[in-house]
Amino acid sequence: MPIEWRSTLAIGHEEIDADHQKLIRLVNLYEDAVAKKDAFELKVAFLGLCEYAEVHFAREEKLMDAVAYPERFRHREAHAQLKSELLKFHDGLADPQGPRLAIDKASVFLRDWIVEHVVRMDLPLKPYLTGGRR
Image 1 (cartoon, rainbow, N blue to C red):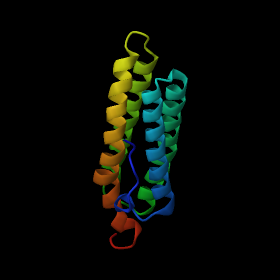
Image 2: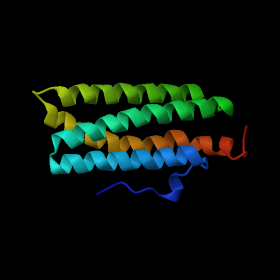
Image 3: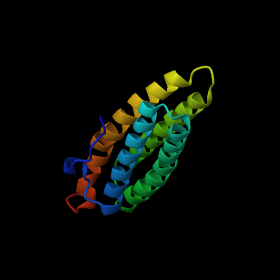
């Protein structure tokens, strides 16, 4: 079942909300490729997700700096951890001995990551972007 964007996930910043929507679409594309057992499509979807995550993280970190978000350093650490996990999955997907396990683990991780990260890490940023706090 694909992940669906809900307005409750919006943080009130047009670019960041658009990024989150695109990341959800990319996770859904990855899961479609897993379901189809299409190795090429899976690799393209995963690499696209990794590349866009980099773009998004950089944009979000710049924004957090601009509003002096007090949790920005912890948030950056979370991004670094996520990048590390994505790299591990990338290596696992390339391993001819065990790509199936990596594929399944990545699928679970990606679903949890996109929703959990937005809810726990990104939504608390909302008041700083909408002028409610500084």
